[in-house]
Image 1 (cartoon, helix red, strand yellow):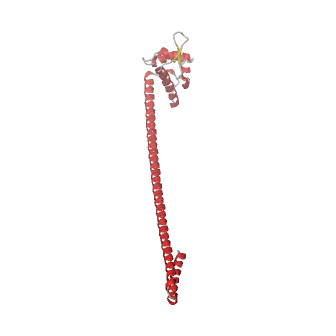
Image 2: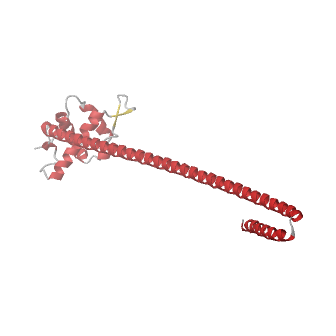
Image 3: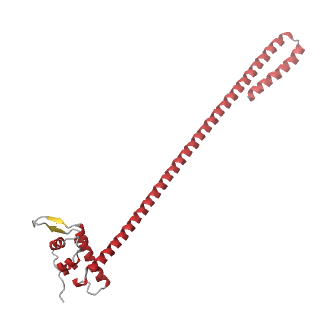
Length: 229
């Protein structure tokens, strides 16, 4: 029994919504004019397939549906080869229902892949959002720590300023007290010296001796207090 030609297989397999002549025109452009050459068609060449228009000069890409049909049929052949199906490379092996099942399987696989990609993208977006939220929280915590550190620094500076003001005020008061004490000592000493001069003129020798001794003791006390100060 003779094997059907590539055109006969395509006439049987190509759905009504596709133009068999368009597919054949694209295959002819790639010098694919037999079933065997179709079986060994490079997968990477399929998406870039073109056809000539009626003028025989202008090239245009094949429609996406035509490219998808050629790709699915080529993939079905090589899947059967990989699965060890007898006659996988023979044109007579393929029927419209087999191709339809293969197309349904490919669509299911593509949908599963698309769903996995969608889930992976959603997971990546969720991770990115979590990372962004974590970054925002870290930045907020850092800003809060800096604000607290700044507030603590301000409080410490205020406390240091208050301590310095207190020390300055205490020193000022101590200096004022010391100055006042010195002034009182100086006034007392001057007064005692004045009294001593007056007494020398009016007292007798005995009284003067006693009084002079007492005044000297007083003067010595003031001098001692002055030196101690």
